[in-house]
Amino acid sequence: MFRSFILSLLFFSLGCKNEITSNEIYLLSGYWNIEYITQKNETFHPKGKAKLLDYYKVNKQGGVRKKVQPRLNNKFLVTEDINNFKIIFKDGSCYLIFQTSWDQWQEKIVDLNKNKLVLEHQHKRYHYKKFHSEH
Image 1 (spheres, rainbow, N blue to C red):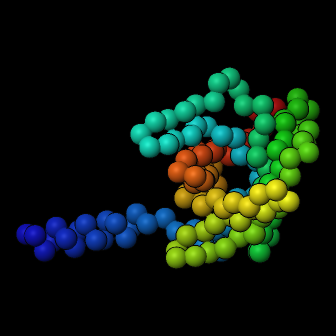
Image 2: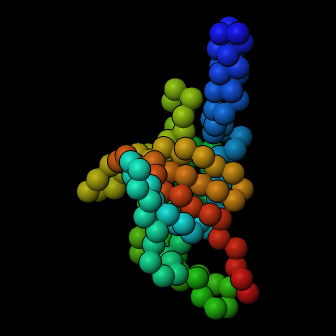
């Protein structure tokens, strides 16, 4: 009985492992709206409707992240906040490596599919949903 429990636990944990592969990284491209942030056992929700979205454009080695504001005519106002990043895969995880003149940091992609993105940075998890224009 104990042996079958251990095997079941091992199978379950391997089945739940969510590794991001280089073939899936293209799913990051597009507009993302933050839903909430988690830290330890707390959840924080943005107040009101989010005014800015994160826009990602990805290639094989890296990409760019921009802050954009949706407009009524299905266009976007692009802010001056633009960050280039590199993509690295290390120990079964995928990281976005950002570097500016003033700072350097990394964000781990915890989960990614066509509608959901979870990034981890400084012990916080940022939960995003894909933005789809309502117009």
